[in-house]
Length: 106
Image (cartoon, rainbow, N blue to C red; front, side, top):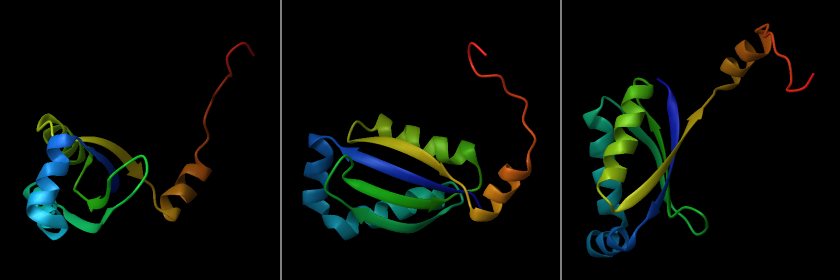
């Protein structure tokens, strides 16, 4: 199943929600969200820095990942940046592809 990295930045309302329900409560809610689209949460971490939360999810496809990202962002409590992750085996496939490309101005 494809993996996606969700980097979430909490809004003021999101921070207030985490303070109210706690970190484990938030993780449980995110697990239910992933399960609702046929996926699972592999890892969930709070962080300091550009993002407040990092979540590694396995979901069936890009549409499921986009649905999770858009639905959570639409709540107004969080802004989500979704990154598609590629396995080493998939990178081997990438390496074997022949691509025609011309750089700009070349």
